[in-house]
Length: 172
Image 1 (tube, rainbow, N blue to C red):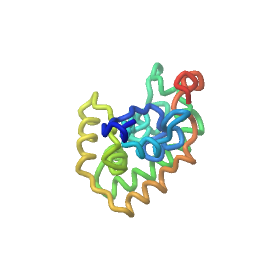
Image 2: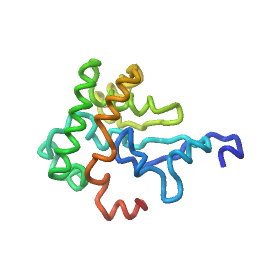
Image 3: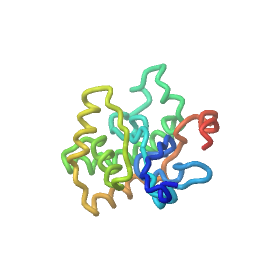
Image 4: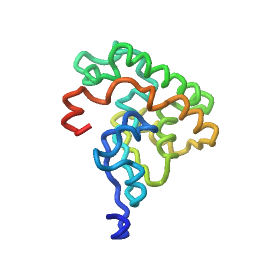
């Protein structure tokens, strides 16, 4: 459609498994990210820090309040969280070597995926707004992008984004 009309649109996606390699869950049953890009349709990355998982600030479920909805999200539960945090910790090492927060590095990684990818990070607190703005200044080399891709591999992420019933309602 976009190619036929010359209109470059952005398709909002709430289905990424994680920040960068979310191709596995992106799109819907009929559309892949690659097909969207082929038609000039951009990608809006909703919750690009995976509900704070990629911020580097969550080390255990004990940090979340009793009513925090992330407690119900499979990627934050039990061994899933430990496995996922190992990837986040590798990303944190890269961020530290660049002198930026893990969140800023993760957002810079999303931004580096192309001009047709638009992340919508949270900015309800000053520190999250600072990280979001800092991401605009982070320059990543090809080697650094490769290191991030190696550290955070979509095939190794465990636990779905949402509980099973919610995933079904979203058609995922």
